[in-house]
Length: 74
Image (cartoon, rainbow, N blue to C red; front, side, top):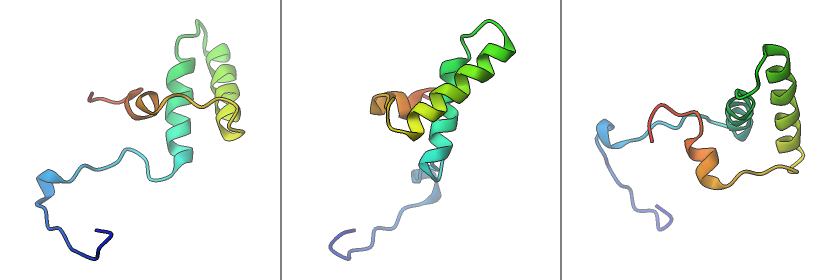
């Protein structure tokens, strides 16, 4: 904790993150958003486009989109 206090929890109460760095999250979001395209080539093109936009901070989805999109659990 910020005040130096240590909290102990059992493993079942610890939630493992999907990603460890923002770039991994950007990849997941770009892949999911582009998945609506009809063909593979267009899907890959749009995935790269969304990924580049997120890298440049020109496209920033809301926090709940980053958190929940393309996850197995809600």
